[in-house]
Length: 539
Image (tube, rainbow, N blue to C red; front, side, top):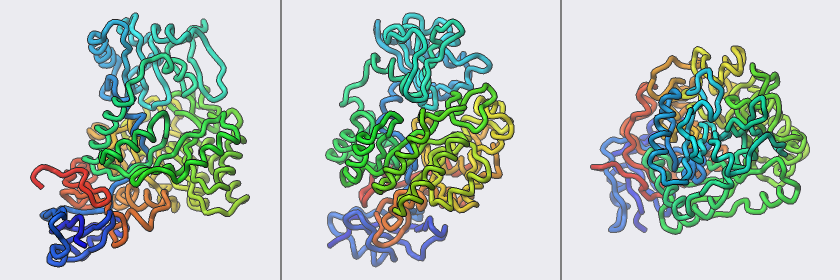
């Protein structure tokens, strides 16, 4: 049978070794690479229905996978006012005022990407925004997606007028008189107001998700590890695939909340392995803590405000039990753990589960923002993947430690920020991702951040340059290691006959481009299962 896809005049880059293969052509059939060789032989494999592309020397490598992103929930959250470029309160107020003026009477204002560093020395709360939101029901996502800022009118509509107790680590932040400041920390508190805010229709969410995924494909992504299955996200993936509009291969991990009993955990096991040709449920996502910026991380010593002293799970031992149950069932887990105490407890729980059951299950820890040496060394021994987002360090922390994250942690812990290099050197499998919509999703920007540890605009010195990854390590972080973390190293992450024809094609070899320029390398072609999902003009 003729090949479905034939790529000619290419440079084939193996992300496993970092070497160019001694071939100039690639062919794929039924979504799998079937041929690596020269152009003459490859042309002979083409038929009338084949897609044949002359790459004119462009570089083909294994498709890039984002190790941590939120496609559907992120698509919904980013429908509001984009505040990611606002560096101070004046900019925030201006952006919100313009959006408020365009609202219909009684309509809600939504915003996203608000960096707490924009507040300077002022407390993060609705009062800092001045009269901009007077009488306007508004909900604004802070950049970490673990907190919301609600206007007075939004709190009133939700009936939130004071502090409450929650079964998980959440808080309605109140002033000394017990009045809510508008800052809501973690899911249980945020959901009180989100429940009364209008939501977009399923059709609107599906259309927005399709738009986001298409842009991700244009940025070179062929896959992603989706760290939620909230709401109707699974039906969105199914609908998009049915329409031929799913341009990424997605591995979806539903959430397990601290209040989950044994029956709820069993319900998370039941759908494992289900899905479609391009998406499937694989794994469970858990949260061990919140964020440093909000004071909801779990640190071994509280932060400089006396916060970040508790786990997200009221009973951390219950988390350990859940990990053991999922491990016995053969279900891989991905746990959000930012603080040193949180990461240590996750590794303790995995080690205990492994001791009780020798099942070869690949677990992972997400984020790992500050940890001591002894914790770094445990990842390789336990076979736990270190899933990290270097652009969090690049965009939201500073080398001089004047940012909110660093000030809260203090010098010692801020100096051991995002230890990608140390984890790699210790033998851990480091997987790179964006955590979109928390940080931008272009994989070349993620790889660049891992390499130079600076903001995308290069406006600041590198934060912890000793933790930078090499060009090859960064490439492996979005290819080989992402495949390993998914248990798919025999199917993906390399250029080899029999592997998936998920391919990213770049104008230049990313291993030869300077760290500060790699984010700007053009993506000329993206291929998923042998089908182009993005093709640059003129190719």
